[in-house]
Length: 269
Image (tube, rainbow, N blue to C red; front, side, top):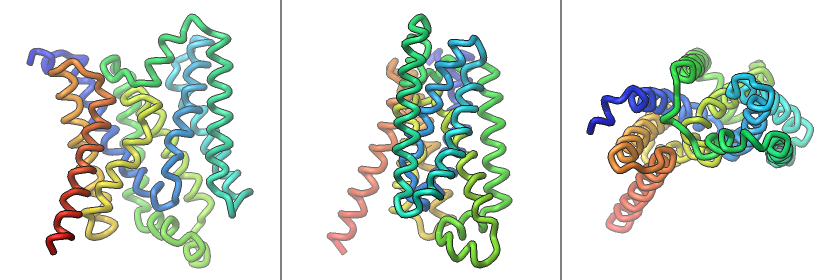
């Protein structure tokens, strides 16, 4: 149990709790927008930015963040261009992100090992700068969501009605997409690009089963997310497992249990 006294593990817990709060907040609104797969898209674009950061010797997470923000603008633009096929914007940006990341890998083979850690997560390597970045992003997400909760709910529940009522729909869409990009970029180092969308969607999937209202679903999504983060990290620390994988598997286990209980109650009722 000495691992719980180690500074690197304490930073991992702090970083995990912070992203476990911000990710389901954003994920709830993404599910409402039918954009659950945007996490994978922005994650792959961020990896391209991180690879460029290593190539030019600039803080990789900062370049990844810039790439994710640019990709979020591109997705919103393409969503307006292909209104009937909104999911096409995600496919286009994901393809471009993967292609660019692959190209940058070939230009800097000497840093491939460092970049690969972002694919699978490296929460134990979080430093004070990483914690500060995650903290700022988390605070920003909470502040914006708290200040505009009703507006976001109306826009993503019925965008046309929100526009008729006079809300600046385009501005709100851009804001929520940018916040998503921020959360995904900082979450990559915690759970990895290949698993980052799970923190956005699986807690929401759990909460939708037990939630009695939209607000209650948001709260429950955060509860499920934080529970999985803590259980996953503690399990990984005690049994020397991959922390990102244990967090995601904890989420999936909770979802299976919730669905099983609901199915059993429905049959018995």
